[in-house]
Length: 314
View 1 (spheres, rainbow, N blue to C red):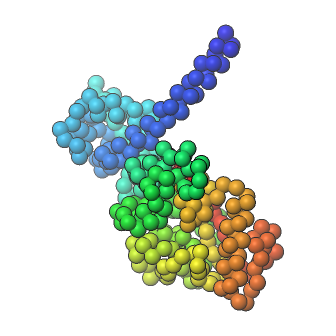
View 2 (cartoon, one colour):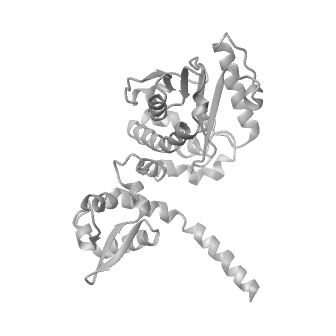
View 3 (tube, helix red, strand yellow):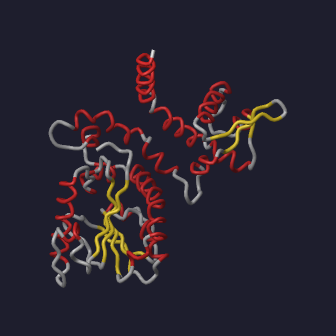
């Protein structure tokens, strides 16, 4: 009997993986329909008919909407309560993170992760084991950066998603790691995207000269903040000189072609060795060795690597 129970538990775990994709796509559907926004704007729980009257898909199949809401309640994104014999749907605590316009909303990153093109590389994991090229390149025939340059609308979506993700990381950095900013006057965010991180850092530490450095098509799409300088370029050819450099590295990501998304100590050492070589050539006042980044032998130049776990395939 015990063996049978273990077998059932093992099978149940596999079935959970089989349908694991459903949660993120149902969540995506809720965002596309603006369900959280509608309830938030109303300020109180809504009945199914009240909700159905306001979603952007008309005419609404009420039975299908009921099934969707039942799943979202099961996910504990929304609540369900019965008042006067009628079910009403409200916002559970996690729902605030999918309300558009909130400073800590993660809508953008969800839209990126569930985008059809960005999901395509998952179907090419097996192919990426053969020869050169990432899963993204196998799926869409080009690097992520070439793809972004060719699709401005996807580039905008990606940058918004990365900015959304960065807000959570940087808020912790400026609040809990203030000592990192002592003794420096300038900071460059390599691969800085639209400048979300640098803007937050510049606000918290106004004495810093903050610069974002990224590819030309990224800089072209980034807002112009007076407190943040913007420089376009290729990090493998040039990195602007500064007292400190900030790198945000995704440990699991399909975008290795520029960010060097790394999943082994060897790759990390190789990448930082390359950064050290660039700094050697750019900052004549200081000689920097790759080992300095690992053993803290050099204190005059700081290179911070912020590791972030991403849901993208390698």
